[in-house]
Amino acid sequence: MARLFLIPTPLGDEATPWLPEAERQRVLHLTHFVVEAEKTARKHLKALGVSTPIRELSLATLDEHTRPADVAALLAPLEAGHDLGLVSEAGCPAVADPGARLVALAHERGFEVVPLIGPSSILLALMASGANGQSFAFHGYLPVEAGEREKRIRALETRSRQNGETQIFIETPYRNNALLEHLLATLGPDTRLAIACDLTLPTQTIVSRRVADWPQPTPDLHKRPCLFVLYAQA
Image 1 (tube, rainbow, N blue to C red):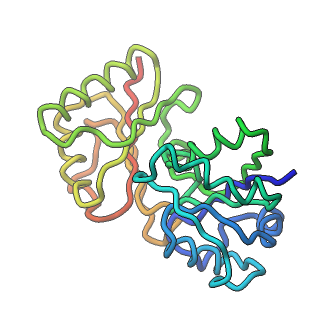
Image 2 (cartoon, rainbow, N blue to C red):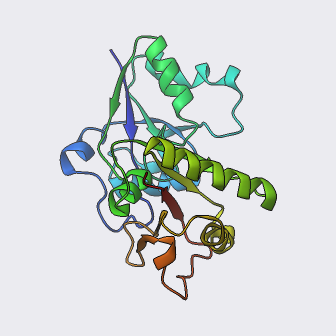
């Protein structure tokens, strides 16, 4: 039976191998892919070294604008007996990614789902934070409006303190510096706040401190992919 391969992609630089060689070899034969962004996917697949010329690959798009009713059609290669690759724009497909809808449907249709080992910015940030890795939650984006954002930050801090649970979230890169400033002004002095920026790249920056001990001046996070990790230990 045809298989759905979940293929991680690099977090930034294709020049550095991002899949173990054994995992890479498993997907070089693929000719059909579902991708979040076609231009990015072609670049990743070329660096990966797929056997078929890049322009001859079959790429279908699954992104935040794809209607639920259209997802089933993306499984057509599997229905026809072809292995299929799912590729996110960066990191692991189906994690904070619209590909999860395709994976769920593949399971419902009885196809084998094969996740491959590769970079996950969420797990890398958690690993490097020193926060609780036994219990954690990822929340995506916080509210943009200042009042709502402050309420959300305080709610996450309370949840972390009460449950011993690490809270992880992201921001639109051009608003990173404003969010960091807001977090430092809102969180309690004993709460651990970590930022993990440009993960796996030469410019990687990771800082993890209690709010009271955060270095000044803070690092410049403007327009850099960044994760924020909050842990209010009980």
